[in-house]
Image (cartoon, rainbow, N blue to C red; front, side):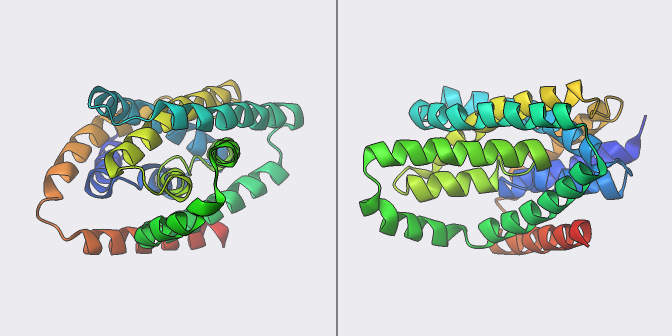
Length: 255
């Protein structure tokens, strides 16, 4: 019984419950720095962690009608083929030192990008409203597929992007989408994407199967407690701490 893994899962779950983001963004660098997994195995393990933990959230949002299936379908039309293509490329070339360098660098950039999206979440809505006049339905649909493709590559390489980055892209393209449907659509898209990418990494042998149950054992009560604590802790303080953690993790991974 690895209590360090269970406590780590609990801590990540607590942050996810408090902020709604941060699972993949913090789990992957934690697996690399604390558990000394190589980046590819850390990413593959985190993808399965995300697919399982987000399934419950997707189901709950679906029950409450918070999923826009049109947007979800357009995102998946871009993200799933790109994820398969990325994993196929890894199979074809082998996960060489060059791939490890690319994975590590992409992971660091994704962490810093996530910090920016968390810090300036309200700004993206205003930017989206200004872009709205330039986005007729046909162009909006193609851009949504392109956004999905970007997320598919980013998630498959770094395991990061299906949460805060995905929500930001949806917000830019659909600034009038209600907050509940934004979150529900983002989570509904994340589950099949992380599952497909996770299966791909499993075929490459990039999963720490013994560690995964211990992480999940801690994360579920952590998410529950974090959701309850949101009533008492200032959101601005929580987001500030999360942003600082993301920046520190990103810089550590890159350098």
